[in-house]
Structure formats: structure tokens, C-alpha cells
Image (cartoon, rainbow, N blue to C red; front, side, top):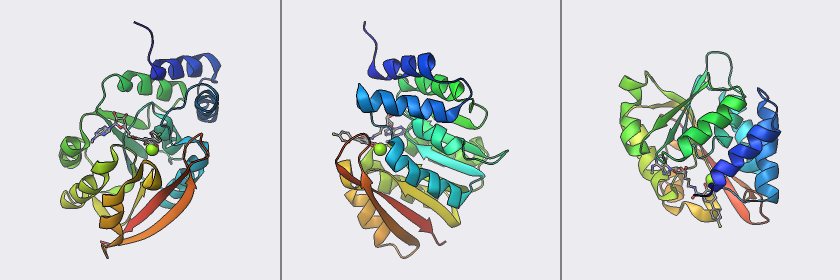
Length: 214
Ligand SMILES: CNc1ncnc2c1ncn2[C@@H]1O[C@H](/C=C/CNC(=O)c2cc(-c3ccc(F)cc3)cc(O)c2O)[C@@H](O)[C@H]1O
Ligand SMILES: [Mg+2]
């Protein structure tokens, strides 16, 4: 059984990246996926928007939906202050060991907890099982039609507080129209759109920031 693309990305990281250096892991993935095999990492261009939003949020507890290979988990976790943590939800059991290994190579295993399961099942468990009070930052990068229902679920579970910052990838491509409709018509969110480009491609995309006003 030949290897998966995700396994080949891990091979490239374990062979080329500097252990314990998150930047070198990010550069390695961007180089591999830019030159050899495209993959749905947020990438280096949109990654800068992610970085800036994480720095603005300066989260103590951050959540990500859609770990995939761990690229954005590394981007977020490398910016977290001491004792801050990232919870990352992923339901594909094939990707989890690969993401764990890549995050380990980046030296960020202490800051990142990968939770296996569907976001809609995990979100209601965050308070009791994962000792979350409220979330300071949420990165949405999983199935696009789940952005809106999961945002509503986060509200219903009391996981958002005044000033919680949500950032959503792929607003233009593949697109998340229901999410945009929901979030921009809801007066409890202050929304900002960031036009950008799809990872590793000359295709337009955008990210949406939504600050929950409580
Ligand atoms: C629904 N609840 C869920 N709970 C937990 N994990 C979930 C999940 N949904 C999806 N996942 C996981 O997130 C990841 C899925 C992300 C979906 N992302 C995309 O489809 C996507 C797709 C593109 C894309 C762009 C252009 C193109 F031609 C083809 C694809 C670009 C992106 O940046 C994307 O984020 C996988 O690891 C999957 O297993
Ligand atoms: Mg994406």
C-alpha cells in the first residue's frame, strides 16, 4: 500500500525540518506543498493573516477545527504565551498521528491537544471534559458547511465571551456562504473580510474575522 500525500508531507518534514524549530517546519511544508503536492494547509500567505489575528487575540485558550496535518496548529501554537493552549479537533484517524508527529517535530506538543472526533460532538464537551471556560480565539478550517452550525453551537454552549475572536478560512474558495450570511447579519458579531489568495495558488480567497460582542 503506497503512502498517502499526508504521509509524504510528514516524511519531508522529518527529513528536512530542524527539530524544535516551528518556522522550519512551516517552511518545509510550504515548500513541499508549493512545489510537489498541493495540500489544504492554510499556507504562508493566509498564514500571515492568521498570525496577526492570533497576536491580536493573544489567547489563553484557542480552538481550531480541522487539524489536518497540523500546519495551522503550529502557526497558532508558536505564538501562544506560556501556559496558553490550543485545542484542535480532527475526525479523520489517518491524519491524527501525522499531525501529532509534525507538531512534535516543531516542539509544540506541550501546547497543542488534538481531540479526535466530530466538532459537533466535541464542542458540547469542551467545558466539562476539557476544562474550558470560554474560548479567546477560534480558527475555522474544517468542512465549510459546518462553519455556521458550529459557530451557533459554540454560542449555545456558552463558549464565547465578549471579545472572543473567530477567524474563518476559505470564505471565497471553496466558500462558506451560509456562514457569511449568518455572521454578517448577526449584530452580535463585528465582521472584517481579508481578501487574499488560496494556499499555493493564484486563485482568490478570503478570510473572515468575527469578533463576538456578547
Ligand atoms: C464537521 N466536523 C469536523 N470535525 C472534525 N474534523 C473535521 C470536521 N470536518 C472536517 N474535518 C477535518 O478537517 C479537515 C478538512 C478541512 C476541509 N477543508 C477544505 O475542504 C479546504 C479545501 C480547499 C480547496 C481549495 C481548492 C480546491 F481546488 C480544493 C480544495 C482549501 C482549503 O483551505 C480547505 O480548508 C480534514 O482534516 C478533515 O478530516
Ligand atoms: Mg482552509
